[in-house]
Image (cartoon, rainbow, N blue to C red):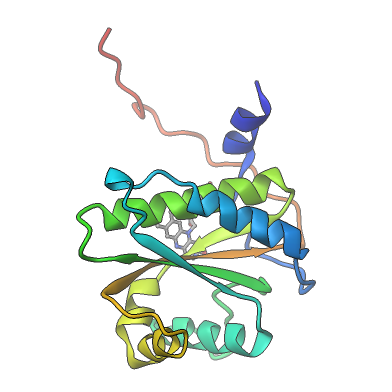
Length: 176
Ligand SMILES: Cc1cc2nc3c(=O)[nH]c(=O)nc-3n(C[C@H](O)[C@H](O)[C@H](O)COP(=O)(O)O)c2cc1C
């Protein structure tokens, strides 16, 4: 198996991160991998907001948690990750949802290749449809019709990755 295939197969979602900040060059490498994802008609509909500011990261965590009222006040939906890479995409591009999803996939696989833990955390849509998220976009001077696609929580894993679930039967059909 070559290195790329190994990364694709061994990447697992991390649900326990060390608080240590990720090396800047590794954050940049993960982001760059995201920006080179394929996009429909090459329109590059997504944008990435890279959050390393602890105060802002904690605010976003609280906003994300509040989307599910069943969660306890002290639950951190980002599992302690110090870096949150938020992907949004331009709703006016027909492939925006696929484009944004590929960006997230690239970033998680790039993280694995660098020995970093990562996980896709959901509810970015609700977050950025709310006044809270709109204010973040405003502060960054981001205009346009952007939908939150997902967050890539990134950091150093605090525990070894769990074994993957067995792949389901009938995942693949062949027409030969
Ligand atoms: C679209 C999407 C949304 C997800 N949202 C969350 C989430 O909000 N919280 C979480 O803990 N995991 C989330 N995950 C991670 C999945 O639970 C995880 O990918 C799945 O259990 C398979 O495990 P693996 O990534 O280790 O292969 C999400 C994954 C995807 C693809």
